[in-house]
Image (cartoon, rainbow, N blue to C red):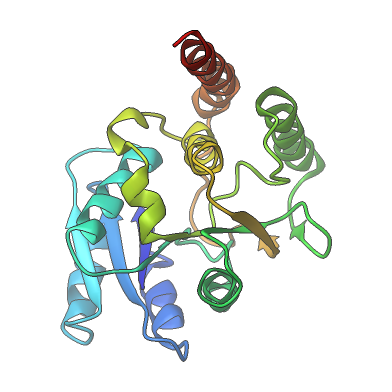
Length: 243
């Protein structure tokens, strides 16, 4: 079980999130994908590797290359090894590490191929977000569902468990988005390939330490990316019918 955590300037959270995951009863491994954080995040992880040499791994990249490419790099790293379950999780405690167990149970025990930690299903919600952020996030989710016809209440969620077979089936070379669009594209690919995508309600808490990586560029990419996904899916379907 591999938990992939991308980092950029997460010095204030790095050690705490590692220890929180390793305190769980299931034996998770962690891969930190660090994009050359100038605040020394990677140095903290290297220090912790002395304490957790077999379970804590570090993949360092040069420059801020984006969330999507960080996860793709992490997936490839894990697929080269014997991991069966792959998790996406933020470093800033917006995602409760204890919910890793619930995502794992959904895939391992309840038949899901993809388990999504969802803010927008019954019993899920967000805490400490300003109203404009809530409207933006929920609006993006509604927009995505309308355009893609995908029955996922929280398509932009970034707290996810994938079974290995899902990642082996998706052409990762074609997933080139960076932010929210990446999260949507991965779920849409799994859904269109026929995998069972299920949602687990979570409480999403805004970060208390460090700075958000949200930007207008990420929002724009998501809006245009959803239209691209719809068109490609439509075009592929027409080609199939024509053959």
